[in-house]
Structure formats: structure tokens, C-alpha cells
Length: 304
Length: 249
Image (cartoon, rainbow over all chains, first blue to last red; front, side, top):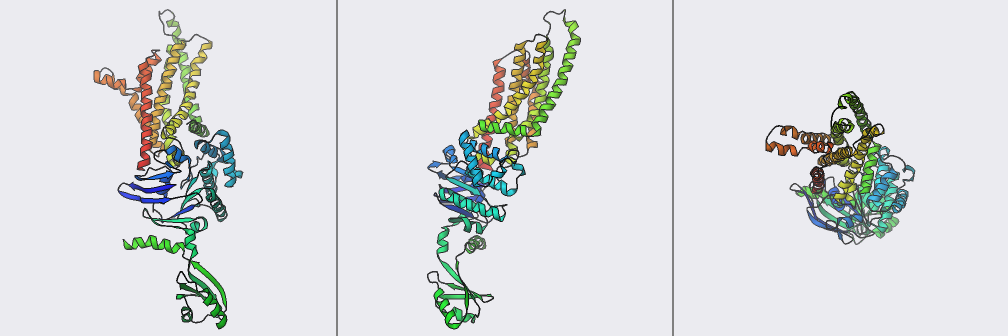
């Protein structure tokens, strides 16, 4: 899936401004952004629900605007609010959706069974959508999006309203989906992205301000957190080779900032042995998403 | 397309609305039917001597169908109001829009669903005059023309209602504006009575006028074309409107 220069305006205000990115099979891209950053609008355009003012979306070689039918067949979309008919049962809803996506009668039956199993819905097949709890509705929505086995799955805030156990199941499901499909999901929870995604993209005020594979973030640590039972004065720690500055966290814990290419763990361990600091914790801390996120989204506001 | 029509029909019957409408319209028309038969029995004595006397079809079936037309006028807006406004409100429209189906198919599917229901209503209404066939002889040509007229009339009601429901997310608003539009179109010919040619042209646009001709058994292809064009125009507008909404909201 390829997105080029996607732009959408409401009146004169650009809500999504020249967003471009690509999504390949096996990637799970997390869209992060504060509320109103244009995440949902982008998602809706990708799903073909909204028409963009400018730009191109190409899915599997089919342009979404020129060949909507073929392109849409390759998309599974879960909107912010799962689109369920209150008066239908879960089975009916899923079967209807399967037929809508061009599956034959037999094919849709097996697809419904498989999707129900994957999303843990086998128990509630005969219940009415209207009577389901929020978490189950969300799951029916996800089942609906993966029914026809689309290469691209677009999930708009898939984890809202789920309890921690359901959350874990859904995360697992999404990671599984990511193995054979391209998944895009939007969220405003950083933890979600860290738990599920292979790539992260941060949107702010309609622009894509950051895009990176998550793995790149985790290769380099920028600080070490240590815990000492008999801590020396903090000035001793700053003098360790490679440590740029240190921060006391209380309870004998310290954070040592260092240059990304040199991790001073060896010095810490050796010194603690020879000087009897009694080291009990040593954790590398990675450049964390939260800092990047806050810097990017708040930094922009500060300069305005 | 048929999938959408089937879903639409299913949802209709899962809501009490459709059943209530069926019961009310059936009860009301049965009552009127009985009144008409009673009238006819009283008149029969005087009709015997007349040459070319109007028969059962003219005196019972035709008025019944005319009243049925007014009933459907009032009731179709209540059925069509949900078509798109409800989907918009429940956000289920996104499912249709992101599915690999064209806008035309969505509109036609929904239209087909609602028409199937309305034709069912008409079939039930038709049973009443048909039940007379066991006791007397009917003019089937006239009856058929009348029913065809009623069918065509409801197709245009439904098309107008469908368009109105694409305009708003409030089913109530859609129902009231449909009712207003239909009433206006049906009473256009009142303005035409006794006036000059301009008014005549106006009255030609009236929805019910063309039905009257069919009730008298006069099958004019112009009347049929009128209804079909009317429906197609509104369905076209609905498709345009939905396409447009992808750009605007």
C-alpha cells in the first residue's frame, strides 16, 4: 500500500496535510497523535469512506479512486465506532459483511467461523449486537475487518473500551495479523504502539512529523538506571568514564545519561565491586517513544 | 445489491415499526372496504335498471385503492426515513462505504428492500377486492390497472423518501420532509382546477392525478413513464448526494 501526498481540507483548514507513507506486508504501523491530529480522517480516507482533496492511495497496484471496487476488496476497515446493526445477531452481522465483501455463500460461512474463532466470539454468535458489551462489540468490529482476509487492515483505535485481559488477547491477535497482512492502527496510547507495532508514525496537526521502525528506537539506549545499596555521592558517578551527567532518583537509584555509542555498564559494575556500592539494579533505558512524542507534539505548539 | 436488499428487509421485520404499519394499514383499509361494500349493497337496487351501470370494481375496488394511495402516502415516509439517516446515525454507513460495492448498488439495494416490503403491503390490500371474486364477477383489467397504478405510486413515494433520508442524520426530519414533499406534489392538481394552461401544467406534475387515470382503467404509457422517471430522478439525486457527502463531511 502506497500513500502519496494525501490532503484533506474541511473548509479552508487542512486536516490532513500532504501525508505520504508506504505499508508493506508484515508491517504493523502505529499512528500516534494527540486528539484532533487527523488520525481518524487519514484512516477514513485510506478506507475509501472519505474522498481526499488531493493525493493518491494505491493498494496492491489498484488506485483507490480509479478502481475503488478492486482496491476496497483489499481493505478491512474498523472505524472508531464499530459499524454494527443493533438488531442483528453477531452471526448475521458477520455473514452480511462477508457477503458485502463479495464472498460466496459457502465461503462466507467458513470465513465467519474462522473470524469468530480468531476474535474469541464463538460463544456470542447468537446474541444481538445491541446487547453486547463494548469490548465484544469492538471484537465483532475487528472480526468484521478481517473476515475477507484482506492484505491491508485498517484499525481505528482498536483497543478502546477493552479490559486488560481482552486487551492482551487483541494485541496478540493484531501481532498475529501483522505476520501475514499489512496493519495500520491508530491510537493515542503510547503503550499500545510499543506493545504491538513494528513501525511508528506520529501525526500532529495534520502532518506526519515522525516515522521510524520501532526496532531502531530500541537498539540504542541513552541512559542507564542503576540501584545501589550503599550509594556514593552523585559526583562520583558523574566521574565514571562515558557518563555525561547523572540524576538521583531517590532510594539509592540513579539515572546515568551517556552517549548513544558507548554504554558505561562495565565501569559501573567494576566500580561497584571495588568500592562496595553494592549494585542491585542495572537497566538500560531506551530512547522512549513518550519523549519523542511529547517533544514533537508540544514542541510544535511552543514554536507557534 | 441483493445482499443489501435482504439486510434491509430483515431489519424491517425485526423492528416493530413494520409490523405495526402493516397492522394499522390493513385494519384501516378493511374497515373502509366493509363500508364501501355496504354502500354498494344499498345502491344496488337503483343500479339495476341503468344502462352501463358502474360495477363492483368501480364502486368498491377503485375507491378502496384511492384511499390506499393516501394511506401509503402517509406511511412510506415512516419506512423510508430510516434507510440512510439511521445508518448515518449508527455510523454503519462506513461499513457500506468501505465495502467493495458502488454507490449505485447501495442505493438500489436499499430501494429494492423497501419496495419488496411495500409490494407486500399492496398484495395484502389487493386480497380484499379479490375476495369479492368468489361471489361476483370482477373487472380484472380495471383492478389490475388500479393495482399497477398503486404500485407505481409507491415506487415514487419510496424514491422520494430515500432521497430525503440521505439528506439528514435525523430519521424524524427525513420523515417529515418526505411527507411534506409528497403532500405538496399530490395536491398540486388542486391548484389546477378551473384555471388556465399554466395551472394545467402544474397539475400534470401532480402525483395522484396519474393514478386516477389508471384507476379508471385507462392505461396510458405516459402515466407509467411519469412514475418511472420520477423514481429514477430521485434515486439519481440520492446517489449524487451520497457521492458528494464523501467529499464534504
